[in-house]
Length: 452
Image 1 (cartoon, rainbow, N blue to C red):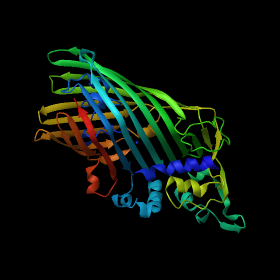
Image 2 (image 1 turned 30 degrees about the vertical axis):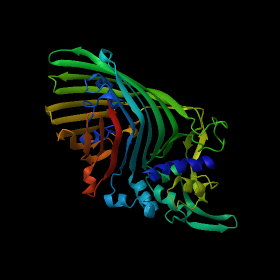
Image 3 (image 1 turned 135 degrees about the vertical axis):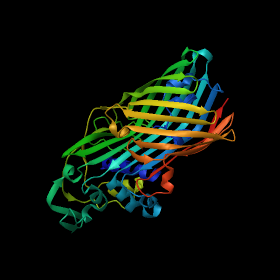
Image 4 (image 1 turned 90 degrees about the vertical axis):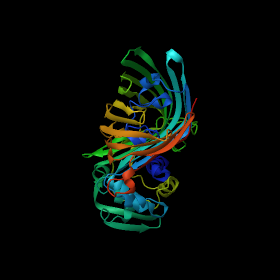
């Protein structure tokens, strides 16, 4: 069925194109592992809008096309991730699914901020995000790739004029086969608006506060889980990925390719205290809100797998996956539902920074997931780091981060910070170039950031 093919194709899409963290994929802060007390201008969006009130040398800032990418798999080695290439994709991806992995991709299409004097600073942005976290438990990974050739499940293979299929004499339900499996995928865009200003100015204390709002448009969402014998989750797929109205109560034959299947609003609030001009203490609650899905909405159900015609995946390219399993026997059961709602990944961010000298800044962050969408963040995360300025315009940064669904990482960054422009690169784990265990492959980049 085309919906089924689209679902599985979407689940693999991220593997051909390359989840929340302390740095927000900001190239000039990723290398420190902390940003809540440091960010200014439009880079405060989604992190701490209070810092829009901080005094900066520039009144206007804008960026075109910044972003980043991150891939982490707990249990795989760097060598295994290196094999995740065109020549050995299927084997490496099978290992990734078995061990579990997370992918985050961000593109900041356009962002800008405008200083308005005592009225504070206003910031706007438009960006795209692709997030996924997959883990296949039990024999799900082998069954998914080998299907009726998988000797660990099927007792015999029957060949007929209509094709070959595997038969199990002692079949299990999908929930039993996929126990401890989590498949999560989302593709979204968002328009953000934030404002912040200074509310109190004293000799040794300055107070800032700000708010933010965003309109989120979701084009694809999959949340499949199998835990303790229970199948659960929903999906809503757009971008012409759903081509049949079968079992879909909310299917729209007139749906446009880029029409979102879900929309919603999110809100941020933040405060910052600046003491003795060198110390900042910040707190923010971000992503307060929900997404409502009303188009192409599905709910997953359990099914007994006794006879399977599907002969497995030979490629991880989304289109190849779709063509391979198109019109094959259904291996994932679902039914249409009218709508469903999911909370945004609400996060409490706490941060501090201290300017030791004009050339050295240290900072730390603690980020705590608040909403029930724990898979969007994983767990609490801490980060600490330092930034050194050399030759007036070269900034070197490093530190450490731990938690948030990732391992222990050592970030690093290199930024060239000139009065009118800024560009550079950051990584969440410089140790990936030297060690083998629990690697995080990540980059944040920015080349078109300007300050006026």
